[in-house]
Image: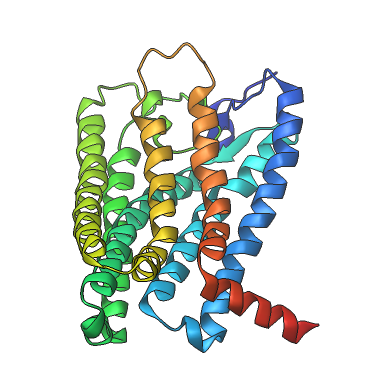
Length: 308
């Protein structure tokens, strides 16, 4: 396999699973199916939340933004990944690499903050039900969504600019499936500052939202415990179930990806965890929202009934 020099094509070479062509063929077929399901599921959530009046609530408003984030993330990475898996040419342009880096960091940061906003929304719904419509009014929801997107996009811009300032000295081989943070491994200078800064920002954007989510759900648990009827408890927990599953799925895959030991005996573990976080999770989110919410299932059945 001939690997071109960085200066000859102005980009990078993603090794991926180059030494395992059978695995690449299998992954190509699997990822195509998952990507189509991601597009179908997330677009369905967005369309249903827009068309059905029963879904014009803050919870589903935030779910549509989660679906939009998943669509942005997968569309920035999966088409290039499929191109690299289907043949020996595994190059990616410098611009596309920077784009993947920016979008992946932006969507990851934005999703952390959005999950926190959704946890606060569930806290208000369970603990302050009589004041819910007053506190979570549409104008506030739009402000929270805009702040969430802006924070993620700006923080990612800072990370991306700092990363692109690191000289690579002609090195262009990335042993990964995505062209993201592993770019720092190609630097020919000390990147301690970049790695420490990236770690601190990532820890801030992961741990602070997670702490707020845990605080919100501890308050929710106390409120649910005080409800005397089993039906009331079940109804209160039902409003939080889909969000809780999404939180566990998101933080579980993130921690499994970034908190693993440095000396890993499984050479391709990083790559498989990146596929799990970047492809499987965005596919499961809309189906979790559909299966855990009777309102979404009802809206879907109504839409299907109209079509047929």
